[in-house]
Length: 150
Image 1 (cartoon, rainbow, N blue to C red):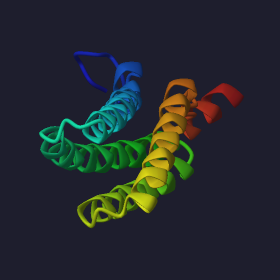
Image 2 (spheres, rainbow, N blue to C red):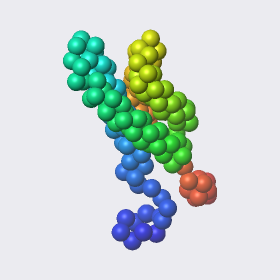
Image 3 (tube, one colour):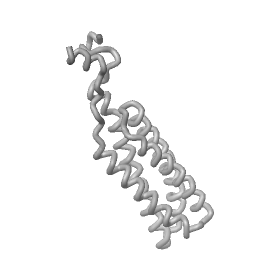
Image 4 (tube, rainbow, N blue to C red):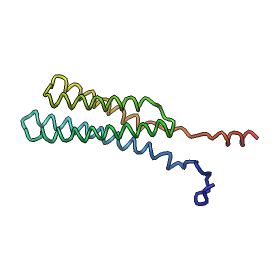
């Protein structure tokens, strides 16, 4: 038993259980906003502001890093909180899509780059919506079930 909190050792408090979900929500919003920023930068570049191409390329690095962090957050929710595993799979696919997107952009293959960007935005939107509607299930300890049954 922990003298400071009065709880059994190894037992997570509500705040500790919410941390992975909060991390997932924050990263999902950041990925969504950064994807929107990428679309805005691309749109401004296409209208003639050539300097924004460098910003668009640099922001691709930020988006790549954010999708990796979001995947790690989804992994924490899945493993530590026994959440669903599909967000980890979707985030892993999203990391791959962003990598392919960067390659298409560097090759100036706009016929694939623009539709793939829209697909990435759709995935980011779906993951952000799920992150805010997901409610972790309470953990039931076997020892407590035995105590309650007696």
